Every structure is written in C-alpha cells, then in structure tokens.
Image (cartoon, rainbow, N blue to C red; front, side):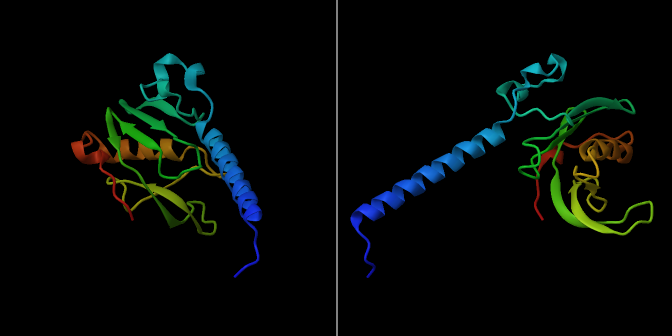
Length: 161
C-alpha cells in the first residue's frame, strides 16, 4: 500500500476540484461569446435573442432570387454546429475530412469540408485561414444545384459519417 496520509488525500482532492471548476468556468466563458444585441434587428432570429454568439461571417442574403442564411455557431470550437437555411428550410450539414484539389493546379491538400444531402460527393471547404466564406459558398452552390426546386421536408435530417 502507499504511504499517503488522509490530509494529503484531502489536499490533492481539493486541488483537483478547484482545477476542474476553473477549467469549466473558463470553457463556459469561451463558448458564451459576445452578445448579439448589437446585431441589426432585421438579421436576428429567435435563437439570436437567446444570446448565441455572434459571428461576423453570418449572412442573410438573396442569391438568384432565393434567400440563404448561414449561422456559424460557436465559431470553430465545435465543428459541425453551423446552420444553413435555403428559403425557410434548414439543410443538415455534416463535416468530413477530405482531399481538396485546387482549381489553380496547386498541390492537393487535406482539409475539413461541409457535405449535405444535396452536395454529398462535392464537399465545400469549411472556413479556415485560407477561406472565410465556406458556408456562404455552400449556400450558393445549393441554390445553383436546386435550380427551380425547393428543399424537401427531410432536408434537416442529420446523418454522420
């Protein structure tokens, strides 16, 4: 058996509890993000009013006569939490790690991309240091693919790879 006194056990347990509590509080503050109250009222939704973090990459625009909205939830802390709406329907997104071949002929690279039921075999690279508009490019690509069609009722159903 080890030669540890009860006092040492209590001391180290208390230190561990304080460390865990500090990490939890720091993590909560990092995820909370800034208040969206300074965002223009016409861009806020009911969820925004619940103090979701605001991301400057969020957008709400008309593209080829269709409204597309994108929300980057929790920034890059938790991948796969972003939302994309075409019209008033949500499109479920899945993130995958895949090989991208740049159009300019430069070397291929591995990165994380968005896929959905619409662009399943043609992922769009997620925002990173190279690009800042991945969700917007995906929204526009979906409108281009859909043409005159609308998203179905099951477009928001998620699946995982």
